Image (tube, rainbow, N blue to C red):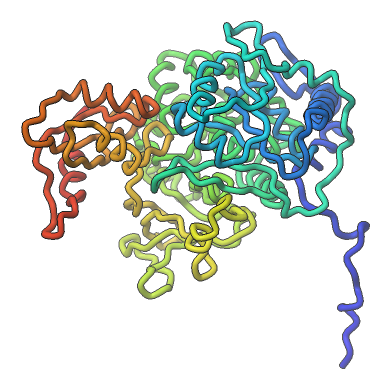
Length: 537
């Protein structure tokens, strides 16, 4: 029997590249009169924001930014960084948001590895960029974000405001939805950070899936807390254009600023690391709970149940989500189940800390036994590795085909996180397979910290493990074996690490001893982990 389906063709009428750029066109046309951004005294509508974005894109094009060029941005969460999530894709360029908490050495490495053509920097962070340029051995062209309310320095570059005077570019979709839209670097869990490439298709689907999973209505008031250097703010900048949201910026995510912005602007949604939730819980004491409740996504280390109990009483409806840089951010959610209503607050909080089930735009998130290549039993006990498949998995690692191939073995992306599956299909992380310490929502590579310790002249051997911490969840604890005859102190070791690492990566405790080793000389970290867990800081 002959079928005629194969005669049907893709045309411009029935097949359009998926890209979050299309959300900007919709926002400009449909939500033009609505407020798009609020930052201090600055308020702009979606029509004004879209005009600025198209002009900035034109200005970047005049500076020579073309398809495939990487532009790195070093900035806190301010409207300019939000605009660049659309302006750079309009040029065909690739957005590389730099973690503002990194040390100059790593920033220099990223600028070099990413083949950065231009750096856009907030003037408050010029000193950090200058140090990175010194280590890089060369300056790069710079555009500076000037905030009149903040004292900053200048490298003499063109200002961001000057870009807004350029001839606007039209809103046009990419030729291919597989084109790169962003380049995000991991926290370097096995040495140097890897460059993770996002494409337009994934960014588009990330926004759609998040809006559905979070059950978001049109016109939310969204507080920009999640750093946009973390997985492009979990894809939320693109989502907010789709929904016609009002995006509120505080620049600094201090508890008083967050709470003040929530009450001043009627915030309905925000995302935050567990450490931020803890800060809010400690800062808010006698105030009446938010009503209606504010919807909150949290990711990183699972929030302590005590924090979830407190935030619930504050009127924060918190949902735990899970993801990685390689998956555009969150790809599973701990969706509330009706039968949880009958449980105690403590029991509810325990369940809320699970990593949950796949977001709707993700094909599959499961836990696989690597020995048998089959999903583990849904018994909440049998451990395996979280494996992910779907359109919001990275295109690959930039300039690292070997690592890409390894990450995609057998048709899955392997997370490196050990977990169990519960009877209802919910995933729960039991232990990380990589030696990663999650402190205040930031990933810290024990390998990276150990590498610095080994550079100290008094250190013979070193091992870094996670140590529980009331505020940060966990922090690095260093076990150090000194060279024969060498002397040093904990304070000296910590100060040495802070000279070569971002402050949050430096050990908070240093223990001097002969390290436990196997017969082949390998340090037995499991013994050290058990001892660090028993410590109290």
